[in-house]
Length: 375
Image (cartoon, rainbow, N blue to C red; front, side, top):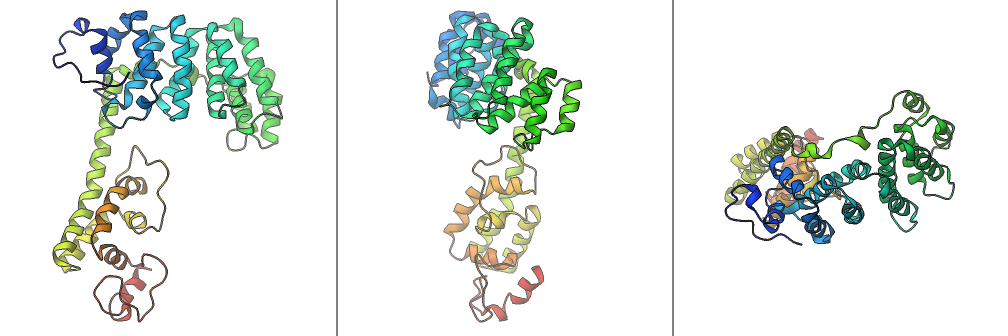
């Protein structure tokens, strides 16, 4: 199931067909209301196969338009509907969420499986034991098993004994062993305290927990990750918070990009004029990190940040790809940027070489003093 055109007239949600309801999943990103979620859940197992189709279609997991959240809605709503029929599609969603690194779904799946109860344990155990699966997928399966045990004490010994054996197995992946230990620590499993200390001593758990964390964890459980209500996602306050974060991100992007585009436009019109220099200084005042990425001094991260702070490096990383395309197309613009910023694009400029600002003068008779001052 992929996205199609949304119904033109919504009317009361109860009057919409199941097909129209599914199409709405692709229309409003993370802003669908609690009213909508309740309507979907009220349709129960009747609509579950359609939700499963959304979650099982790989292309839905890497959308960049308003449909990017459709798979998250499908996972959350299948979890709320529950029942035996939800188990298999949610297991498929677990694998796809890990493959496409969808953090919203990954974080919600343990408490979702916890709500589905002990019937999920055999399938989760199979995922956790699969040596062909990535360790993060196997860890999420272990966390889901712990969520089941926290809701169903009769499975306590079985589940935490299994997680303990994974953590203690010298032949297992070290990252998986460390995170299995983290689950035991979160759940204050005192019978495994010696095992946890051994993981800390062997440095397998380095950076995750130490002996001080273990002492504290044995006294104070930290199980919110396994028990939270994922349907709070649809609470009006949560929706408003996400909208505000999104608006701040868009505003920040405009704040960084416009000064740099104005400086570039002035350079196109007038070359390295006094006005262009003034606009360049203004752009640098807004975000001094952008030249590092525009000039290739620093590499962009594989994943660009989704939330940014105005004036900081994460904002520069978010804006640099689009700005670089524009600056690269203007002859001499990057050389001008390098000169104005005080450093060449690469290497060191000789005193008698042409100045990188594009003036045509030798470096020693143009920007050498300014470059030294910046340095």
